[in-house]
Image (cartoon, rainbow, N blue to C red; front, side, top):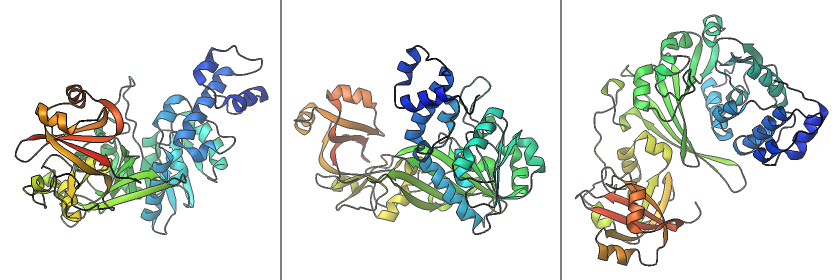
Length: 428
């Protein structure tokens, strides 16, 4: 891969970087322009503008092939990991090592403030790209190691933090999700990792069952479930020599993080913190086998009336599954045991999720539906513990998607199927 192309190619990229790449590909190649390189860089810059705005604003960066751009972290999640690395270092930011460097996004953020920074990647092209980009991004004196993760790990100097993001694709390009199916196998390498670092931060697929991941790895002291704009993006496990979840004295902390942008473009991070006692799951990891709701469900049916407020937790909390604790923390009953919707008579601004005001509650008989849905041609529909899918329910109701009405279909504690028709709270 050419890193510094000729002037004609650079000029073409500058002129056309906001153009449709597919349309550009259909045009004839101008004299002297490396078209394949230009299209790749334009596509990369456009992806960075959405995903890594500070990188898109940095002149002279080189972008890698599409797959690396697709797999790299977004800026808000990388900034969160930077803050995590700073906290773990706790003033002793001696050495940070990224054993699966990729395009270098996480490395560029997490290594800031460390006296020694090492990036390890076996793909030579990515190593060259990162070596070119890091000084432009203000990451000085980074050590770039082009080599195998496991070989480097065996002889590496001790580090304050190690970051590892095992590849979640098999040899045929298919996605994998189990830890043991990722490359490298973090479970097999755990002993070596902890022998060479105070803390190991492991990035995993948000599709994983985090309870099982904690049980499989052991030595986990923190779990971070990160969502961006209410979409779950990353699962981070922090390993430390003293963080074995099978040791009764150890306390696992779970952080449910929601990243959302302010009107001025800055990112805001809202984090709910829990301990292992707040979750149900595998008893061997110290989780209780069950967790009864702290707020009575029997009162929910009486409370569920027009004018009350209903809440949907953010995606990280939904992934964490800490519903009983959430109910107890904010003093709200759930609509039903498996609805994952919460109620209050007055608005609770601090609730970590979306807030709606109930307009009507209806069962599914034709007369009640006709009255409740009168004048509603469009609505956003969600189902929670309900026998119909969103598509089937929308078909039954004969309403289109969109608008400012939100309908939650769920099953109450007495087994009645209902629709909760709401309006979203303003200024969220």
